[in-house]
Image (cartoon, rainbow, N blue to C red; front, side, top):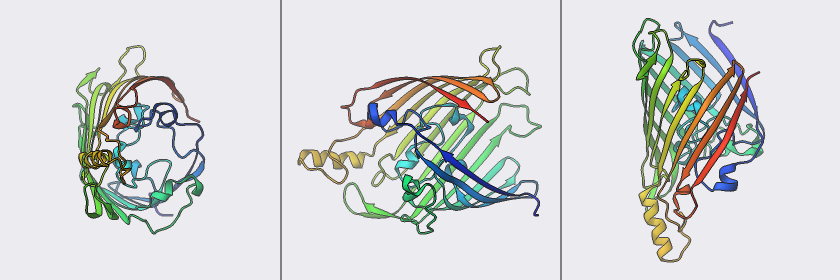
Length: 337
């Protein structure tokens, strides 16, 4: 057997309903665990690590969101606008994330010990998320071609010998080769793209250099062309505090804010359709923005049991200005076997 070679396969089973769709009518689901409500194949791949893991190659059925546009801090939230990946990327193209995988190949390497570069190609097929396939749509023919993506990460104080406050500074770009359609204000486009910046940096530490307790702010900002994408500007930001209370060093206290700005070109097309009393291809009810405020506390009861009381406030659901704001109170429970 080759040293450093791994074969990985995972299945997912989900059930339940979507509170956002059923009761609120907002764009960014208030519970990340909703999506793909059935039993399905998730990832299936071969992974080869070389040169003391400074070079890693993967190929097979992959979730793009496991390797790009993500941070461990995002998973401390319940709203799907944070948890996993900043959600606008899914509305602007067929970006795949748990529990939906597609064919792909990924290379990640360290040209310098503090710099991580990732490059990947994924089949861009929106149909892989359909429940009817149960994760077995294995076609190599993506209706939107291939998603090419790269992400560069500068790792601050992340090595064993570092004593300063840890942080990550990331920038990424992606392109869909065959995505096409009509622009909001006329004309045709072929190809689509987006770029993003992700920053997290600890600013306060409880204890000495070996401690991971303290306050870490983060921000994720995503951009895409406004002439073809419904959410060309999106920001996810927050504060994550580990071990705020001395008696609970493994807990997390989390405050976050989301803002998704709908395309001004799309809004202009919607206004025109509304004025002419037509149902245009992009609707006739103008959309402006939706935002979310979330506060929760992550009770690490023991290594395998987590309870997360959670409060969210949904502002301007779906950007219409006609759906009431919503206060959401709930609890997320996690059990690891």
